[in-house]
Amino acid sequence: MQYRQLGDSDLKVSEISLGSWLTYGVGVDLDASRRCVREAFDVGINFIDTANVYGRGAAESALGEILADYPRDAYVLATKLYFPMSDTDAGLSAAQVHKQIDASLRRLRVDYVDLYQCHRYDRDTPLEETMAALTEVVAAGKARYIGFSEWNATQIAAALALEGVEKFVSSQPQYSMIWREPEAAVMPLCAQNGIGQIVWSPLGQGVLTGKYRAGQKPPSDSRAAHRSMSAFMQHASDDRLLRAVDELRPIAAGCGLTMAQLALAWVLRQDSVSSAIIGASRPEQVRENAAAAGHALGADVCRAIDAALAPVLG
Image (cartoon, rainbow, N blue to C red; front, side, top):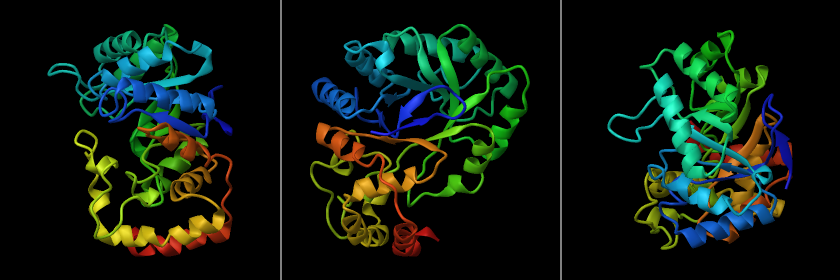
């Protein structure tokens, strides 16, 4: 495993991190979740990402039980807030920031998280109020650093312009070979301001692993075929996209990588990407994905990838 600095923080995070959306506490039972986390530690993954809304607290609770077996300084832990936790609990108001961090810490069974992230931008709360509350959370020792997910460049710049508040050190955008939107404005702005990228869905909802084939039903053991984990899997039935992804097979083989490893190495080619979040329901998935760390792709390989995906990149 290789490690990178997370923005201007002092956190060293593994290039591959373990996420928990739709898996731990939701679609994957506790024993299987425990095996995946154990495998993550065994292969050198030290960064675990979750959110209060994943399973409405279930993911945090599962991780809290599992991580209780590990020294607190053995891992970097991140969680998020914004999405509804009840009919009356949502957003980034000061009241919600303080209420949700305390609830997350209880479920995670820790005194602090290393990274507390705004899961989305809250248009209904003044930015100044949100940033002041997050600053108080850091001052209280409940979070070491703060970050955000899926903020646009205008929103990021507005937060950076505020004085007397804690500065963001991380951005969590969707980013993959087939979703490159952050490259235009978010990544350059963040790079100029010491904000590292923790990218989600680097495998394009699993499409870039090659498990889904045009004209065929999803494999029975895949996320697209799973009753509780098949949300947001529209790419898995896009035959035009799947045919383009098929063209990546010989490229991956030529690099001695699996399709998943090629996709992860591609996002990690960006110096501004501190870590790529993977989801896993089986330990072998963790091990395969972790093996992508440290693989540098040559310019010729990147050009071949662009040519293969050109029909669907627009």
